[in-house]
Amino acid sequence: MKVEFYGHVRQYKNIQKEIDANMQEVMLSGQYVQGPMLKRFEAEFAKYSGTKHAIGTANGTDAIWLALMALGIGPGDEVITHPNTFFATAEAIWITGATAVFVDCDPVTKCIDASKIEAAITPKTKAIAPVHLYGQCADMVAIKKIADKHHLKIVEDNAQSIGAHGKGFKIGELSDAASTSFIIQKNLGTFGDSGALVTNNSEIDAKVRLLRNHGSGARNVHSFGFNSRLDDLHAGVLSAKLKHIDAWNDLRRKWAACYTAGLKGAKSFTLPTELPGYRHVFHLYAIEVKKPALRDNLVEFLVKNGIDAKTHYSIAIHKQKGYPWGKGARIVGSVDHAETNAATCVSLPMFPELKQEEVDYVIAKTLEWDKAQA
Image (tube, rainbow, N blue to C red; front, top):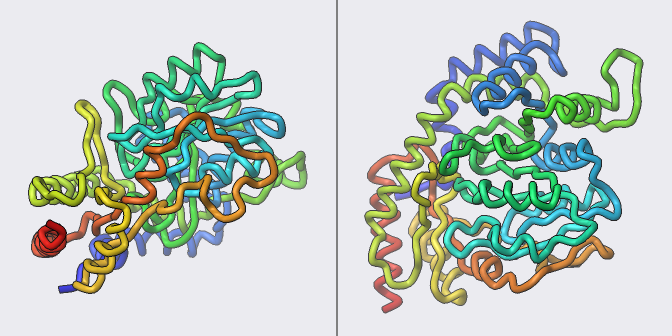
């Protein structure tokens, strides 16, 4: 049996008529950049997110750094995040000219450990950039308390957790802005690069709209900006898909529950945890092998048996080649949990269109490998 890691083609076939209709509407309109389809999707996404504003960008990385720039963050400033995430989180901080400050992740959720943040705060600290990793929210209540106490801004990296929520809070509710990515492998993905940020702050909304469009709010009138626009074809794809996102996330949760029940009791790896009161949307179902030396062996075994398992963020950002870039980064305290997560994680196939027999096969082969390690 072959089990893919992504279900892009299956998903397209399931709602092809809806996607094609939106794309044709855009093509026949003759308005492909900042046209009516983009405005429609931005309104839909803001409503879905429960925020006043949603601004489409060229990609998720741009969404983070444009939000930081709109908040006035730049050279000489510091932004606190954690290193067991996709490179773009820190990259966006560096693009602004600010310094990325890394603290450890929580050993259970793998999101930023809120208890480590205050020790990293200096007079240069201007913001916190928590990442909602793998589909589960960081502890935004605790992060918000710290930010308020120290007069810091918060920009959430929500590239992996559209549709998730925490205990008593929604993503974007407790921050200045929340960014996301719509690259195809995300829970809500289009056919290429795209991103967005949501905010309840009208000043951030106005600034980012200028920054993404060459600093222009009117034809032939420019201040300072860039070219980072979500085009209308991608917006049409996303508009069609947004209607299904909650149902798709429910399916991800169903398959995650199957994995957890089927793999319970394994000796060689641990399973992901969903915090009480939280809604985990399982962008990834990431297990952690107990011995780092065995991680690649498990991946190779699964791939050999037709299962497209992968590793994600297997090199922590502070261990990437060339780190640090100039003086643009520092580490505060131990980041042992982040390093362990990077060195031991294995992602099993996870997408809404999985079939029960495929999930059962993944479970059987993963347990077969586990048994062989005893």
